[in-house]
Length: 324
Image (tube, rainbow, N blue to C red; front, top):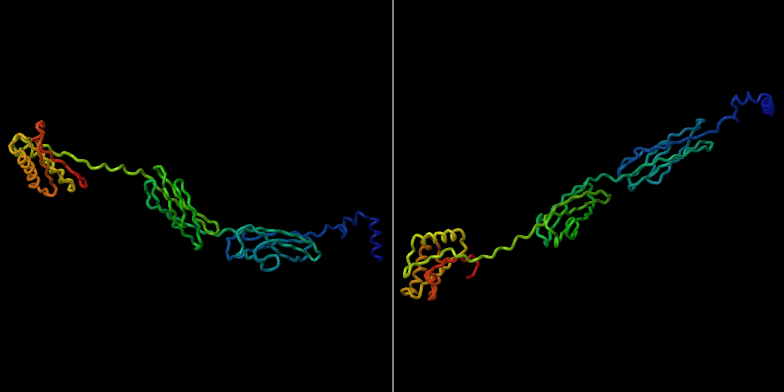
């Protein structure tokens, strides 16, 4: 009591000197500071590695400090200025871990650090094939996506095209091409996994014009031989014409020929003469290796006003499959 009274009296006498001496009532208040850190700041989902969280704290009067940790995700292990955090079961996203620092006099500081859980790497590969790669409009083609991932997850397939109608069937799709104009069209499959990784593959379809309609087979006169009156002999010029008949029959083994022979009514024995003319031509062809089954003969009498036409023999080509 006497000491306190003496100090008070002294302060009244010399206040400037006492203030300069730094007496307790003139000292700044005790302060606690804290800064939170977490390493690594990013981690893949499902990773077994633990994060390290630490707080850098200080007390201006060097008091001992106590630490309290909390967070909105993961499990915290340990106490003190540094702890470990298990984030292996967290979904992708951004999370925080917080530390509260306090000394024995309830001076306190708080800090927060953030970390991110990333989707794990999962390289996907995909290859698209189409069968057939070329088709006419109106047909249906099949498209297939062959995909794989390194984690064995269930994959989803989505299909897109710039022409036609797609009917998805999982890893395959049917493309209906009715109404498509000739040109190239792209069919794309997007493959993604359960964690949102995705990759694309494409195949190209070429729509072509249908082939022109087949030209129907036609009859053709390969030779016309005009016999002299009452004659049935083949001269050099007639044989030359028949050589062209032989060449055609050798080139196309499916066709046959029809020999149509006539005689004028005023020739000697016209019916027999017409038959002899046809037989002469048939015999020459068979001598050159033509099968008798490929040679048909028809004989007849010409009209009274037919002129040289009544003495004409026609060798007519009949294409395979055509009836005559």
